[in-house]
Amino acid sequence: MKALILAGGAGTRLRPITHTRAKQLVPVANKPILFYGLEAIASAGIKQVGIIVGDTADEVRAAVGDGSAWGLEVTYLPQDAPLGLAHCVLIAKDFLGEDDFVMYLGDNMLRQSLQGFVDTFEAARVAARNPTLGGGASDAPAAQILLKHVPDPHRFGVAELDGLGRVVRLVEKPADPPSDLALVGVYLFDARIHDAVAAISPSPRGELEITDAIQWLIDHGYGVNSDILEGWWIDTGKLTPLLEANRLILETIEQRLDGDVDEESRIDGRVVVEAGARIERSTVRGPAVIGAGTVVRDSFVGPFSAVGANCRIERSEIEHSVLLGETSVVDAGRIEDSLLGYHVSVGRSDQRPRATRLMLGDHCNVDLA
Image (tube, rainbow, N blue to C red; front, side, top):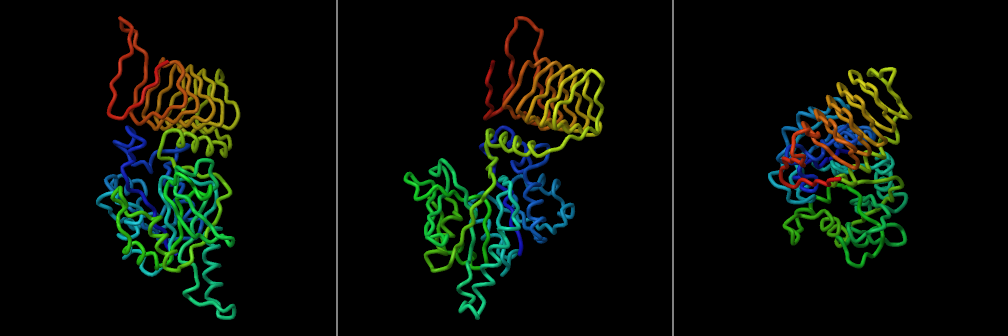
């Protein structure tokens, strides 16, 4: 089995951060989102990985390299424009060949091993091919989708199942959902998906939709199985879900103090202070991560905060926020529920007349106290 990771796209919902950075490389708990997917794929025993890349290809290549850090063999597959998930399968045909594969959206995170999902698919295909059970190759499922019960199914692609858990219909963002089962950004396919993506037409938004390709399989009599996700799943493409993913990952950390913490400082709970970081006359209350080379001085860093490398926090309070790195927060009062990019400077000027002075790019969002 191979893997196809989707790491293209413009990341418009996370601007302005994604004006200068791939959305899949925005860190959660100080680790790029994409790395969590690579770890999951490696843990499932998959070795050959194709990564779909777009305008941020150079950055993704620099971060991932040849994949050997995870025991993977990575092939990069350029996509000229974000033309849909099914289009990614279309351009990856030569890489995928006749192999089964898992397709994984690089900006999604789920707290559940892929191994069980893969094993279920392979077991169903082996059983269907067993002649002693009256099966044949054509009876093997062509796809398996991962589903999650959600309170707001109208915001997602939704699956309708029969009594055996097989998918009979997929509906994209329905006004009247047939179920509360949303499609999670992980899919398993065999080679028959290549016929499907070649046969469908672009949707009204000009993209080849993977839901249309899966529906094509169903309409042509091919089996599509489903598996229900038990743990959490988050599409990190917006600020609020990204902060929620950061919170959930930080909930799993254990205390590790590799940096310097002076006697006037206090560390409460599960806090990671990386080597080279310094905590001076400050309180850090976990779960929280302080990146290498960061200085926290006369400040408070509260729960669910991930501070990247080489930041400077002085006479300020940070809580439930993500600071990506090389960022300065000085005399800034209290900052919470925030995402600060690289090389950001937040401060308070003594210049009179007193006023808020801003230099903001496109798509910024500022909420003033």
